[in-house]
Image (cartoon, rainbow, N blue to C red; front, side):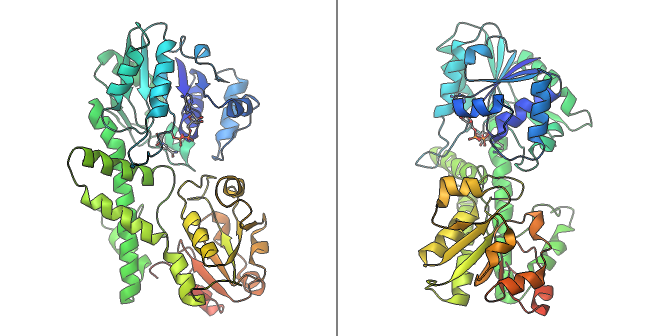
Length: 433
Ligand code: NAD
């Protein structure tokens, strides 16, 4: 099939590359000329495991091209995906300006019947607005379909090529059949393509992210209760996770959820509910718990070293909101480092992928960076672990102890064992353990 994908961010780039990998002819369109220039040269501007290799192969084989020009991709496409950003507006609702601008540009370039697909995460009613925006600019026949994306950054390629399910909201049989044909190679193992009406498809994405965010805030509150009563979150987690109704995945306590999706999608569904006169109480609590959880490590550090952290130096391992990505949007590291700086501390940070992102968009030269994890520890008052990258799991603890000024570890992801560390002479602070 001939496909165009509008927006070459985490979602658009992965979708475009994977559609090319399954034999389609894909044109990726972005208004960011610098990004498109890099992609044309085979440089992937984000870190996503496996993406660069797959992208280069498909570019080399002639199935994948990049452009800033809608006219080079849309007129020839049978299916056009909208995968642009939907950041939160000032009131928390999803800002649709990029989606609607993309829709108008697509409309102006349609040449024959086309299926236009909302892949961005958008509130209920958006497909209708996209349809209206396109209809304003074309006399061509087209259908609008909702096909939310569930990939996880860090495992995006695998998630896209082997999705748990594909959700398709459509009111047109013709469009639904085109989507089935396009997705057939990805569901050979029997995972379902779920057809539904458009509002249900749009809401499914928010419901999924809201449920996952709720699980995180719930486990974080259980961890805080563990601390209060002297229980261990890891035991409780295993105890409840073995109940098949609960399941063992996504039950880890930590320092709050971040990233480009959970925070904004929880806010957006709360806003959508408010607009319809409904008070979404659970999700408001989920947000509130998350806000305080992101401060937890700063409170612990101040509990140990005092409110005034002037003259103190902390080594931070991990900046990205989770491992295997360079994405720092809404990362707990922003709150923790911000809190430490506010209290007068100095911070030296290491992350395998996110340092450039941190320097450019978050802390500039207000903190120090190193590309050697052990170097961060030198003369630091404590190690503060914020992202559970695999390379942090088994450090040489003797070397860690020798490098630190005081052997204190704040483990925001519970990747170390309190028993082991205490035996080695460390003071250990985890989450609910
Ligand atoms: P992103 O910010 O990484 O990328 C968006 C891209 O769209 C940018 O390259 C931008 O230049 C481009 N763009 C903006 N306006 C444009 C226009 N008018 N025409 C062409 N290109 C335009 O965003 P992302 O993280 O890929 O997210 C995209 C959407 O997918 C969002 O709605 C998000 O909620 C959703 N989503 C994201 C993830 C994720 O893990 N990142 C997962 C599932 C769904």
